[in-house]
Amino acid sequence: MDLATIGGIIAALVLFAIRDIMEGENPASLIHIFSIIIVAPTTLAAAVVATKQKYVVAAYKELKIVFCNPQLNPEETLEQIIKIAEKTRKVYSL
Image 1 (cartoon, rainbow, N blue to C red):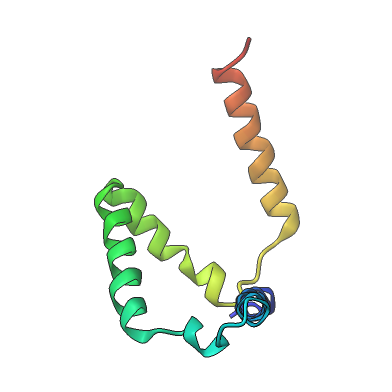
Image 2 (cartoon, rainbow, N blue to C red):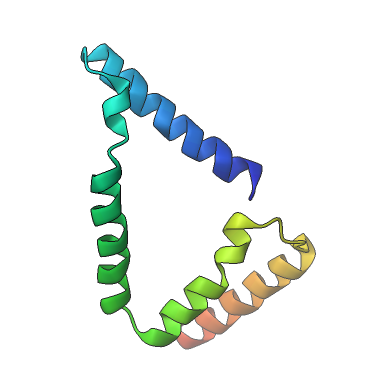
């Protein structure tokens, strides 16, 4: 898992806990397992139902970029972005 991903999740939880403390609530109330069990899969299922199958499969295949440390080549990525931009410019020229 990428260090920035872990840092972002921790920062979000800390900020929510600070908000709870400032409002005089218990920060432990932030984690309610039964709510997580209901909300997380239901949200995921709703997103899957509303999206075409090929995009859902592609998204799951790309999750490795978020949770793993892929060896990306910045020059290659830049070339891909430029190619896509050129194709888009040709198709949607004004």
